[in-house]
Length: 113
Image 1 (cartoon, helix red, strand yellow):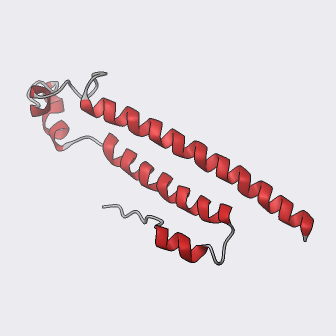
Image 2 (cartoon, rainbow, N blue to C red; image 1 turned 90 degrees about the vertical axis):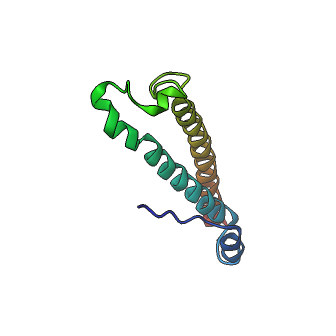
Image 3 (cartoon, rainbow, N blue to C red; image 1 turned 180 degrees about the horizontal axis):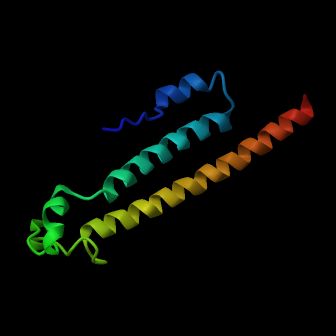
């Protein structure tokens, strides 16, 4: 089991008194990225069905009675994983933007001190 801690709205309210807006935003999005990464790690792991049915070419797998085989482009698993990757890429982009804002903010504060 892997435990992931999520940065909550309550955490954000507490941190706003001590940290800059960008530092709080970075903590929030880092938490989101960590959660998405954990979900990605778990979702790409093989299922219990795989352990039992891969040896026989997945032909006996009960999943394929209801869906396409896992590697098929229209398989629910494949679609889920593709959408998860897109979501993670968007979150990574937001995190990069916030990191740039944080660096710029620190540079500006350094000039005005």
